[in-house]
Image (cartoon, rainbow, N blue to C red; front, side, top):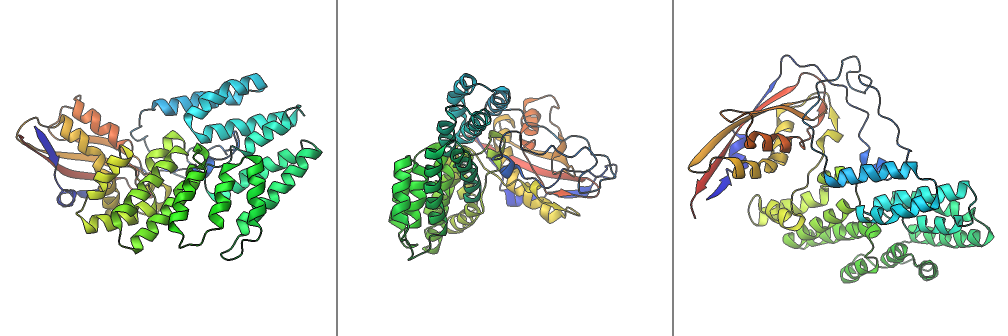
Length: 418
């Protein structure tokens, strides 16, 4: 028996958005800076504001808590390793965390190497210089600006480790400045920078220097440069190159290849993020490529490709934006964006024969989370509603003021024997 989810365009016609008359407005935290915080030094994140002290409606108590997603194994492992890292203070303790940190991705390795180096520097340990080098060679996850900040702090620590290390730090700082300031046609300093990076065995910066020396039309060489740094910490750099290639491919009307490159870039970016943020790693580059690919083929085709490449789906976190109200058109956009998550629930736990219609309802809280998930004529303790609630826990609407929004939408699942 194979079931299919009715086309989303038809489903939206049956959707209604209404204000929840008995709800109170929320007071969400300050503008979400999770992506930046993820790459901050351990312990440097500012604590969230107390309840009722956010930007929006600070005089109104916060609403009830929305549906909460279950903690994944990776999230639990990161949390437990973070606690061990916070408690570590000796070389043996840091060394014991190196392998599990590497298994969790380049971000955890970076956090480990940074704290290890800072601890060694503060105690003037004999290995302070070596640990500063290790920190420098862990920089990489995040944007170019975040990498530059990481390298600047690591180089400062390296410089303070002694005269020999000071000379090394100065040489690498000059190389970094060269790469950052390189312009098309002006590559005179790059050979010296590349030599410095080869000497320090810094494959990330070697790749960046090589890319800085290429002209925009050197597509084949840019793709080849991706192989210069296969290390996990180079994921963000490689993702940026793939996104540039995807943009070029769209100009050539090669939508499928653009979509594939944009999806590979998302996969790389996910690997450099905390586990809790990976579901929300969708990029504008992927949106543009998917729009072109769906236009060339059929609506929803890119979602199918997305599942093939990523093994699942990736989304925008709309709750990172805030507004005074939540218009129905905006809520529909987010609903359309996330509705694909319900497909597996309806297909696996829906009616086993014939066809079925499921009227679902939920409430959008002021912080963008969802609560009060319900389904008409569905066992409230059954597998279907449990599955639906687990998926709705991932939905994120824009944050807004005012009364809660109540949504009702009908989904249809049809089945035909094969």
